Length: 496
Image (tube, rainbow, N blue to C red; front, top):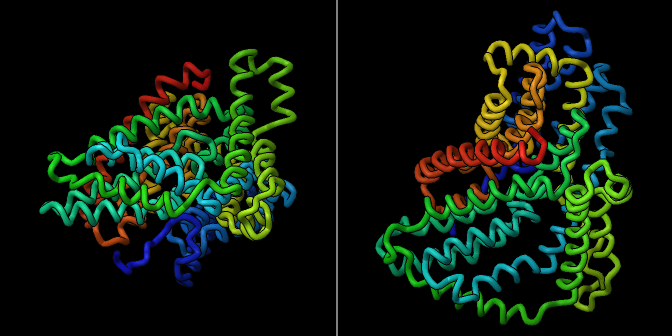
């Protein structure tokens, strides 16, 4: 394995600060403020803050989370929002949903439950009976785990298993490039998991901004109704694109099965901490799904639906699952519990701050009226008056920006813009917002596009040219699949 350190985009504290880029961010703020003299003071302040934040997020002049905090501070200092309104975004219940889901995911990592589930599947003969079947199994495992665990953690956890198979393929065949399919499947499978609200930060951000701006609340089951088809179709197409053309190029698939079986033996029987994690996660998942079934059975306006949503929203469900982790006794851990506060404190707080800062910026843009003015101008300039044309534009922008910035930063930039354009054209802003959210998850071309891309590229086994060529094709696939699923499913759900 190469010693090249992967250059992650998510919560990128690793980037060496550039004072010149930071000063350029200040310059962007000043220039935009001066150039928008026709707007009122609050709108000018929001425009300048938003532009500077976008510049700093894309250039990564300072850590992404600090940029989010800085943008919130700027909104207060310039009078664009009151301190109560600006920092109220950091106490939004969506933030608590995020925190709870992160802690549940951390328990899966700490207990080793995610690794056990992956090894259990790979030890089955039907899952690894051929190279093609093994490739699909790897993608399914990566995608399945990444629906609830960060794509970075998923890719890092599965990389050693993937490398074991890759070494076997390269040793048995003369086609050294055949192994790149497995590494790209790991990267892509970890990133296409948009089927749950908690699957990626942009999903949670989109739900929050849609609720804040339109009053429409998208529950866990409703999101899965359009998100899971996108995920599953993308998984199958990824497999078809990466599947070796010749069976001889896949090597002996029994290698990974034998490896998985040995690792399972070393893991031993399932541990109490793993059982506790399963119980906590099952409780949270059940509470996430029930509201959707109630709404579909009795209607969203029914008393039981209103009562459930008021007493047990998604954030409360996540926190109930989290609390269970701290309550169930576990003999296999030093503290006697599946989760400790020391471990919980290691969740991705930078992503949470980045997300909250994006909510504050979005609120400022819409409350100040800037979003409406900007949306009307863009819609008029592009002649975009149809909801699906705007949705297509938002999806493309999401994909393009996510090639250069983290998916959360991309969503922070594109989702408010997409909703503003839709409102400017006087059409439903929900489809464009969802197109922007999902598009922000689908940048696959560059080693820096996603943490999984960076992780597999750091092995030195995938040429950048190959990643870009195949990633471009998959970007196009992502756009087509996203638009098709949204166009067909959202009207059925009453969201378009």
